[in-house]
Length: 470
Picture (tube, rainbow, N blue to C red):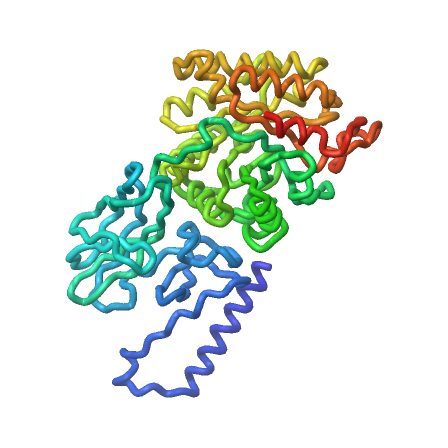
């Protein structure tokens, strides 16, 4: 495929040269000839350095990718950067990407990188409306509503005109109420295999109000996609999310998992990883983002572990009302050395993680209930040691993500056992409960470990019904 692209590009160049030989441009006019960038189009491969025009602004490709609806240049600063100048000769360059520096119930404070060239000042735009005009590289936009979300871009200006717009930044004022620290029970739903059920039908049958949608992976480089291949918008995942929200529910979005081509190793910096997460947040509007940090490529790779943790600081800063969860494996007595390191490093780096969720399965258990309790107590002690929290404070930052029916190691979790685990978690004030997965929440006694049933005798959606009572 790479050789084919090179050949096509060479052929196009030769064709242009041939066309140029047949068309003579007067010498005096040649310096005035400019080549307009083509309009951005979905379904198009863009190489690094390619230029396009979108909504009157010129952009340059940062990372090679095939465009999709929802990945318009103004929406994905990880893929596109504004070309300096904004089309006005003599105007300043586009300002650096803005960031949120503070939020209150009624204001959002921003800062950004300075433009080059002669700069008279900067205008902060919300859509086409100017919300602030300043001479420096920071501004506070006030008189906003409590718990309202706003998206801003910045333009520099001088007597020659305005620059192109900066990348966009989205933030929400504080003061949101109604959720507290506890998240609704949200079993994993995976649209990639296992005869995925209609989420609205499951909601109607069980009373569950939330699902953890899995998994966001890399579709190449630092570009996110469902399962590494399905688009963020317009596909089966987006349709399921729309149905969940249409039925009055909410979604948690899970990044990573045990296998697949993940964003952590592919995004070269925390900023790039945060940008990829922001694309998903902008496309989906989740209540929670869940980072399943697993296996040797993320959990046991401390460079990648730190990259993800530092990125989560940026994600939380830009989305203060989206909860951030990290999910990882455990031993029967609590987190292993990699998990302890993750907890301690999140403390050292000041990462505002809302919930630490362990996965108490595939860990050699012969008594899932007791081993889940023991592992959770080990997590509690690790959190207390790292943060100086009380038991109650630690429990309030903890979650459990189990596996219904038979696990990969043939560990058995029955509906009765899952009810015990749920009730233990509720009694101690844990704030997250999930399991893998709704696809498997169907009976098939003696069926083994398969994608579309639990391997045991049960009722349809029985584990989901129990989880809904969390």
